[in-house]
Image 1: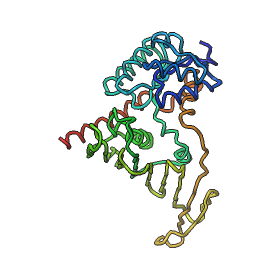
Image 2: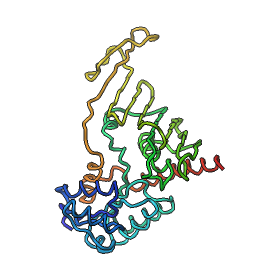
Image 3: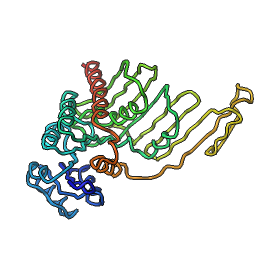
Image 4: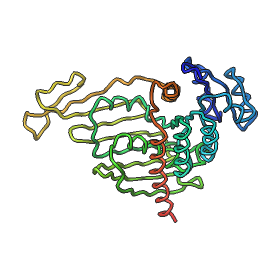
Length: 329
């Protein structure tokens, strides 16, 4: 393999897979090998649109690639990824990594044995509005997240916890450096055969508490995140790309990024509260994920969300979903 130009393919070119093809065909750090989809008409149409090759079988595509984006329905993630990994190919798997934790564990073991990368498409980890948090020493005590969406047929092959809430589970696990202590969850099925609305409360061993609500039958899209820790409060609107940060500082401490400053009542004149509104650098998070995947294959970077992180998010999501099913039944 030429380290500068790994050959990449896409398996599954539905709504999201088509975007993978769009970004990969433009990427100058890889050679786009082509695509495969079980739907003949769709794979030919997407291949024609982007001027690339449509393979008639998964085997042929795998044979011609160094790395593969798997953008199939979740129920076949494990089967397709295992075939790729056994052939010695690096894989980017859209979230959730697999349908079961046992499947994820098998893929992780196979990846170790075959010395290949597993990267998982938890796209919200690269949301531009989340990036400013990297500048702070985070030790969250309480996190609250709302992720609501209007109903659509797309994605209903998995329950709302594995479709929407798993994004926030992954973000929270990346921010809280502590094992999960316990989980409480409830939810209901409204329009589909699976859970459509879910609420979960996670307590970590270090005392941090996270509360999440996800719904796919809301009137409007809502994606809001709030985080509290000693002397720091963060609020993020993922849809608006708006991040607001409130910090408590000593009176003499300077903050060049502060937009507003006010004395903190009740603390005399020794402390103050400052308000920051970081500039958000707009970017395409999916494109950045795929850039990271290619760079990881080249050995220049490591996956932002590796297979182990994808497995942990899945494990928590399944525990939440199973708890809701027990409550419903």
